[in-house]
Length: 151
Ligand code: DQA
Image 1: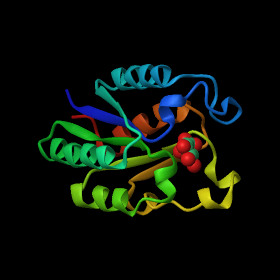
Image 2: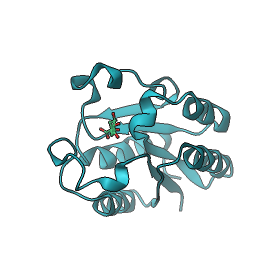
Image 3: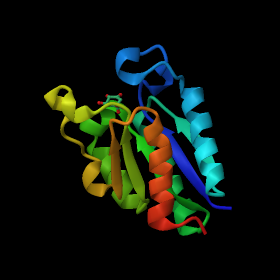
Image 4: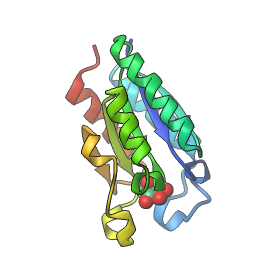
């Protein structure tokens, strides 16, 4: 059975408490359960990882790239939080690891401050899901499987 890595970046461990008007009342644990349920529908194992540290996210992308090459993983659903708008290092890591990534944002970043309108990750993502709340994670898993298959 292949896997999908759902990776959340900085401040997403605060889901549920953090600006609920924007991000909702569900916690990260709720999101991770939603992802595991979405994976199960496709016969895919969902692994979850959250970090507030850029280097840890980079290393997780490198490892995911190796797992994809070994035929064990389909790809990564990645909410990089604010690093989306700042991190050339994450852009480089996705390219270096040659790992299929769906970029995801809970909120509609294009309807927010202008500094959120630019993403370093979109050019190296296979797709982008924006503004669907936490249901976007299930859509991203569906999209990754639809695009790349689960076998
Ligand atoms: C976010 C949007 C980012 O701009 C912000 O920095 C986040 C969360 C989202 O899920 O909507 O931390 O990625």
